[in-house]
Amino acid sequence: MNQRLLNFFNGLRLRPEIVILRIVDVIVVVDLIRLLRNHEEVFGTDPGLLKDCEVTLHIQKDAIPNFCKARPPPYALRSAIEDELERLKNADIIEKVEFSDWATPIVPVLKKDKSVRICGDYKTTVNRVIHQDQHPIPLIDELAHKLAGGVKFSKLDFSNAYTQLNLNAESRKLTTINTHKGLFRYKRLCFGFSSCPSIFQRVMEGIFLQIPNCVIYFDDLYITGCDDRTHLQTLNTVLELCKDRGLRIRREKCEFLQDEVNFLGYRLNRDGLQPQPEKLRAIRDAPRPTNVNELRAYLGLVNYYCKFIPNASSLLAPLYDLRAVLTGRGSLPQSLQPWAGCVRAVGYACKGINFDR
Image (tube, rainbow, N blue to C red; front, side, top):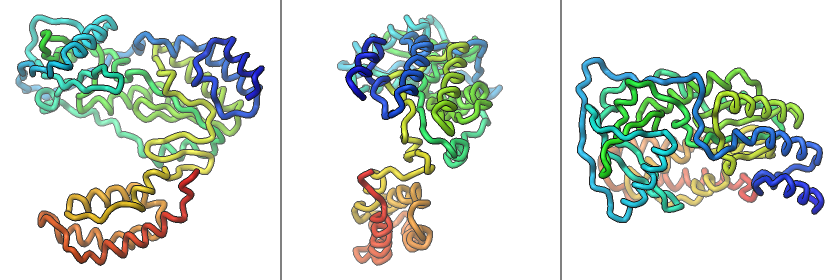
């Protein structure tokens, strides 16, 4: 980009990550910037809340309430936990309660910025009696097929995705967490419930599924188009829907009009799904497994990318046979001929991949 164009963007007072785009067509850039400015509300810092939507958590009819005591948190994290509780309370995501039949201890997760994410350890309480939402999670190949024919790609990330869905009054009683500061109850859907992924996917598909050139996978929404104009029209439709329904998108994690985006463990471009070089390096450079667990981990890694490795089934068959024979027997034999042969073949196949793309 030339300096005059950069000065123009600076005059719009937009964040740098929105400006630095791999786009040649200046007109498309300007249209994109205008489109994003018209939807600044969607990228706001205030918590989103989906309008006209209230979700329900279903449990077994004969479920007996489970009240667990609070776990003493590490002293070094107490202040951060209290700050996060206060933030969630001010954002109207949780509320203080004096009594509850259900109570779940928390697991504080330290984030890179030294703040904490508070997660209820619901596997010890509600998850034992919860009914799973039966909405199917889409397959990666199915999603990629819907984006076929696209030239460029945009990726939107919903901010604190689950907490943008309101819970009904009865479901809120199940979410109570027990902390060193007392009992708090979630007013929104929260992390930790085993049915949450399917619930969120179902609700989001109900909003966005009918939009062409657009797919959603949990909190990530992908957009494409046969040309830039179509792409921007779809992006505008999505952002309009988000604004009308009260949804919020995390600006710093978005990508717009890119030739290629990361897509659920792959790279997605106009040629379709492509392997990520770092994952292929891990396959190519994997050390020899010394026990059955390490062999199982290696096979899992290769299996994720086997579609890109010619004759993968034949190459891996001896290792799968070995795993079946040795399961539960501990260490692998020192002379591991099937491993050596498979590694050479898989490594040779991986050498055909351009790792420097």
